[in-house]
Image (cartoon, rainbow, N blue to C red; front, top):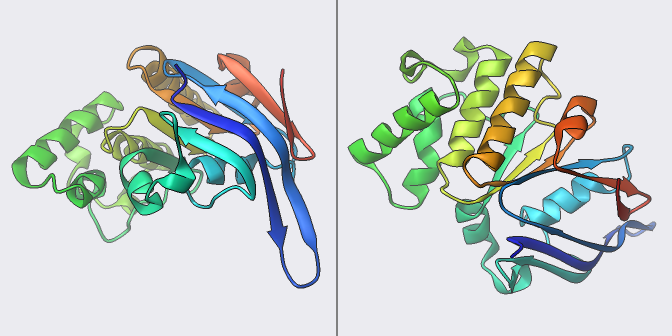
Length: 222
């Protein structure tokens, strides 16, 4: 059964001068244990689709369903906090918090605090291939590749099965990009995550289980 479904979704950006049709009747479904790549030119609608799946906004028409329930019927703040884990190109770690505090932050929002949260952060940091010695450091003390792996650990701390990534290798060199791709594939194939990646990275597209291409707000499978 699909964890996330997109059913006949359209979306328009409107201002007082114009209406832009960003998505036009998009249909697709995403299952656990798979890595999906969403590719397409800038302006094709892929980032808009990711934002809708992340619960940052609602479709103009159609439905996004998480575990069979439309996001229009879900508290979106709770959905973003507990179900839609997002990894960004720019990492978006909180600069005044340590690595440990960044990873435990989503847990604390759910009331999971103290030693259990810190122990969980230590476990997750090791799972993404970093030593526990990074836990007391601040983000700007780490390389870009290390920061992105911390961002993955933070997303995993949400304890959801849905992982959305927006150009996760866009700011990384070839070697660190490969490590992030390896990690995302492992999360999908070994840990059962549904991983959906918006990307221009041809290496991700080549290794993804399924590839969807956006063109002029419409989706087709490669």
